[in-house]
Image (cartoon, one colour):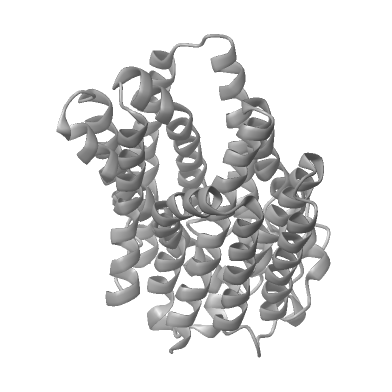
Length: 389
């Protein structure tokens, strides 16, 4: 198996195990304690890596990138065993799963760095697209598989499956024989919360790209907050219909994953925001027709396209500047995403607790869509200017 195929397979299997555990833990906490504990669980899974993943990578800087990735995945596997042993204690399960999320995020940042070192340049963009959209395949398969394993067996069985997925990832991904860029002079030590690496701030195309990423993350928070109210309350869908919608959303991303994995197709074009905005409008303004289903699938397709485009351009910026510590730069990008998500989910919870209007959030989402189009245009213009210089 080639190095690109091993990276894609390993990261997808690990993501599948993560989604399987995430879904099963939500169901388990709902049955044991109730929705308030589920909300706390999701908040901790977002906040913990936002606070701790980047400092963790800062502590490990100077070591081979592959070793850092392997150690983070091994730590997740060890924590899965810990959750298995303490599965009856809700507080310990919550703490260990939050810690696992920290190592998962650190591993994701290291993997992006690893791809730039292990994968041939002509395949890098396709592999990044496949890895970033591989979570869509996990979204399609993970919740269903987690529910089946949990229903037929137990929460402990789900943890064993996750452990097996992580072991497979460690066996597949070619992590041996890498050298950390930090060891050649650049360093991420002393990283300040939410402050980007110094060399990144002045890099060409960085500002419009980061602007697009921030707006994109806000869009994701709003979609996640509106998903259930619109599908259940506005469209009046049954639980099975909701499941079908979510699966089709994931299928949009699976198309991107398949194109990158089997045909090495990828994109760096920020005009992909048009697909995302179009899907959002079709979904929101045709709630009682078959077009809503198509729109939601377009949302999933557009989300994966924009996510992949941003990551590919970001990887290109990092590769062109040797002074940027790559793992720390990826950790910072994910830290920004997690921090916005944690704050957004907290505000959404308060908003709905106070009987907030769905219509207000829809209006806010439409405004964010307009900003997405603008930021996509600005990034496109910045890239065109850089190519002509």
